[in-house]
Amino acid sequence: MNPIEHTNNRREIIGSAGAVSRDGGNAVAAPADRAVSPRVAGAGKSAASVADMIIARYGAGRSLHDLARSASATGQSARRQEISLQIRKAAELLFPLAQMIRAFGLNLKVIAASNISITAKVGGGRRLWAYAATGDDMMLGGQVITPRAIWFQVTPDRIGGYARKELFGFQGALMAPPGIGYETICRAGPCICAGCWHHIATQARELELIAPHPVIERLLRTIETLRLTERDAAKASNAERVHLRQTRSAPAVMDLKSAFVAAQETVHSRSALGRFLSDTLDQWPALTLFLDNGALLPENGAVEQILERLSWRDRWIFSWHPNAHLWSATIYTILETCAANSIDGRLYLTAQLEILHGNNGQEIGQEMLPWQFGVNNKSTIMR
View: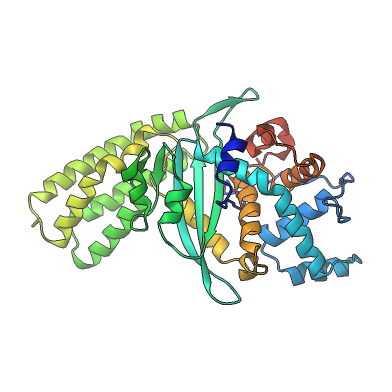
């Protein structure tokens, strides 16, 4: 299905992400002599200026008051209301692009999902859901890339129905924390649930405090081995990652399973440790899916880290206007997807705002997706 058509069929769902590269590399600096950009939404601001404003607000978490003060200090006329208007118009322009990223992500091979509570500064609270999709390696512009799409959903509460509706029809592997409705998605099919070793490690550490046992120490050492392997494979292609896992992680996991089975023979089945061993072995097929799937990670920590980072931003980001959570979802989708694909968010925003302002509501093509844009504009790639 065409991503735009898919988007229009599911337009009521909100998606978005936002911000900083996790590769530890240095971003290519934006050109010092910025070309004069077309005015965005007829508001007298260039696309580059609006992109700077968005990066400062959503990437760095600066408040509207702070942005207004900075503008005044440089002799510009920028009231807080003018800045919020620019952000609103930019978010409305970017919405179709954010929805296309989301639609593309729903057709990828793996989705990691999680959610966190966000407190509105004006009182009350909302729930911020994140979805991070990873696809197969693909040839693009003569190079192998792994497309990654990240989007967000903001809801009034944590009812599992939101996730079930968002992921309806997804046919890949879903990694998500247990207990908040994700499991029912896998039971209904056609997707499958992947296990999370971070969740197993958390349970093991809690168990170690009340019932220490050598097999728990063995488990934690094995999980550390998995993490070291993943760090070494961080910049590898999916195929290379599978090879490394089969060489280093698979033997360690097989040995751990043997240790679990042996420990069951000496531990009472109804003890805390016995139940933990039984439950973990029941999850073994889901926990070992990542060994043969380079797009799948053994832990869900990356998505949870994104949510933690965004939840500590200025609370007004999600509540300064009745539609602020929708605009934030759109902008964070763009920024986080750029970061996941090592694309300079400012340069990408500038280019897309110029294009979207001039397309007069026409459909946008896949060449505007961040990974496509990065291949076609090599200077935007963060090294």
